[in-house]
Amino acid sequence: MNYRKVIGRALADELAHDPRVVFLGEDVGEAGGAFKTTAGLKERFGDRVRDTPISEQAIIGTAVGASLMGLRPVAEIMFADFAGVCFDQLVNTLAKYRYTSGGQASVPVTVRMANGAGAGFGPQHSQAAENWFLNIPGLKIVVPGTVPDMYGLLRSAVRDDDPVLVFEHKNLFTVKGEVPAEPDDAHLVPIGVADVVREGGDVTVVATQQMRHRAQEAAALLADRGVSAEVIDPRTLVPFDLATVAASLDKTSRLVVVQEGPPDGGWGASLISTVCTQHFELLDAAPVLLASDPTPVPYAGVLEQASLPDAARIVAAVEQLVRY
Image (cartoon, rainbow, N blue to C red; front, side, top):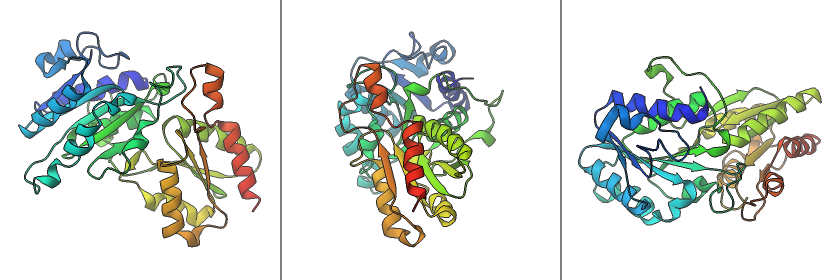
């Protein structure tokens, strides 16, 4: 199954598992989603799958209200960039409701958003918007990069009693992987646990989503050059599994973080800051951050690809770092 189709499979399994789960968004029902990720859900689950007006404010506002009345809504924002339209509801209502009610109310809302560059959608539809929410306490952020992680993390998000933002990378829709033929809770992926994608001893490379795959490609190239790279996919940005990164650095003593999106204010810069303040003794060299160019995402394909870190840039950064 590919990354695109497994989204609908995960939603279907959770809608079947819990009658309190409802799903709403623009064109998610009759049309099967803008990216055809939710085809067939309306036919199977009826009014529990609702098409909404073109209003992100209405989608999130409805989801918050439904959650307070005992439902477990999944809300789709078609492009992650459109989160700016409903930013106030996400950060000032959804993220804070449990806290401002003194714990009397929970808001088990899952917000799905398509993010990321590389697919030719231009500057207003290609941003790594997950970085916008890092400084908002009360929101969990998951960034699955494989089919099993997409399936397992989305199902875990729907079952979580707190708000979870799920970012689905548009440039990974054709990536394939395996999921169980029948729903199986053993395939749920816990929120807040990183994945050691490839073990190594010379350098730790941390990357998510599209960059995870490019880091794996780089690690294979580095192995041919005698450099052993350990690749870690955090899978969850909030909460972040720092312990897994620290355990890797205890072996490698060198860190390269590959982040989609401009370098300032992103999860990669935050990770490097945290490692330097909490685990400085593990480092033998200054950490390296590879990020997208600090420009709007170009529409032209050649320029868009040039603005993103690729395997060659990762290899060059690692080789320079391991010389120290």
